Image (cartoon, rainbow, N blue to C red):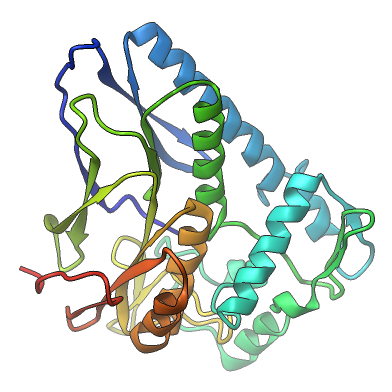
Length: 327
């Protein structure tokens, strides 16, 4: 799960063509969204924003595992029993997710949802799950078990208790879809912030690129680095906004699918990529993998950069990013 951990540096100047920045915040998919569009007037801007909202709602109805009428819920309900035919859009999203799971050796795994009931991170957790409980939950996780049939777009979870969930890729996918839709509708510049999953295109009215600031996870009221983004996506996974304390130890909400336990040793992982969907999944995967393995992977991927902060506050990054120490 991603958190809104960016500050935006937006100039509200009006250019010669009369274009201005219009913003609107709203709740969708259970999280905060913010849409920023560059337009000549408020009426036109609101039309674009409404178009984006409708698209997010459509995607939520498709992928939400909390909506009992969604195709995702249908797949989960039939685990261990029957394959379920789904829309091509959902089938392809699952295929891509499985591809990222292979790439990250399961550090990202959309079948992680089987472990959801163990960790709520709302203060209810007072003790660690027993190893027996963890083993039973992890046994139901495994992207390799998914059976995808290209001929009829069916998805089959072969074992009872298996589940798929899009918490670590769905908001990024929604941001990408809104960006594509609004570009096709004629919007030349905008920025979608899906609770920290960001997709941007075009420039601000004065021609300057969009700028995002990464918050220091050790001092959450401070920005430690600014980055221009133009046609890119950026996503950060962090464990400092949502966590529980058990026996004096702090446990963040990003779960390692291989162990069923919260990942330790990293406090944030930021990924820059061409698509928010990819950045979303990779940010979670790198967080789970840790700096050495995670950054090694990121350095091998085209048009991908990453920056990580470990539990000691050290900044580690891919070869093309240079950032000073945290202040």
